[in-house]
Length: 266
Image (cartoon, rainbow, N blue to C red; front, side, top):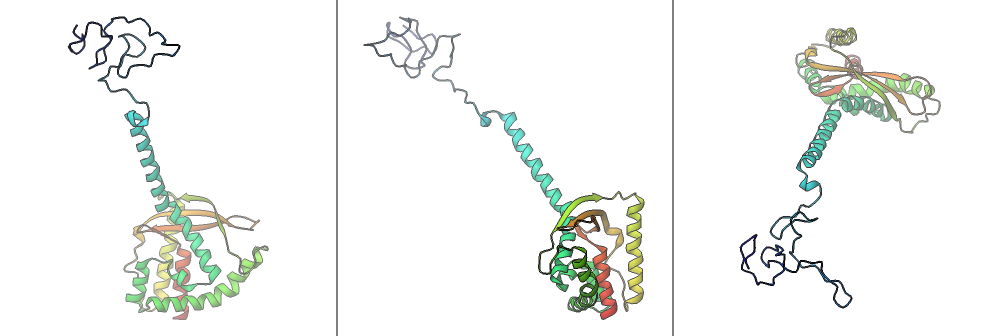
């Protein structure tokens, strides 16, 4: 007898082909129990064509799971990639703007002039150094005096008075409520840029030989309103204005304070 599926030469009484597992049809009645025990299935034997299982010995069985479902697998990989891209965008945009507010209050908390000076663009530091002859160490010294005179007496003390539950030495915790990027075509955006330009003109008039050659207002690529509260503050939200310059976020209020410090204490 020859196997109809693979052509293997078989014994006339063979119930299945030992090579491919094809059932020959000889004595194909349901298996009978032997001595009360069920007959174990033969490895590789297949059910008749059209039966519940038509997988032959040489066929690769279909394994369920994500790895064998390519559309699903590619969909999951694509979804993860999108999430990562969104997280990167958040960290490089709005998150940086919010960080300016927190850094500002860290500098106030510690009364740290180096922290304040680190919050101004390198281009302005270069202008101070090359045009006005004030290097970074000089700027830090001026900022330290400014903090002692202005922040310590006025702002820092008023901060304690305003937030009744705030005690000196406790950490000032900033809670961001909302961050809104202004439309470049809006009047608010223009007003902020105009204010920065007026401040630049003022400092050029009062700081000896000061010229803003490196810092260029036209390179400001975004402005954000950041609404926030300080922990234990039960009054009203505060608003911080931040602008984006060459990929990083800054506050002109902080820059203006530093330039004022140079103006008064240099």
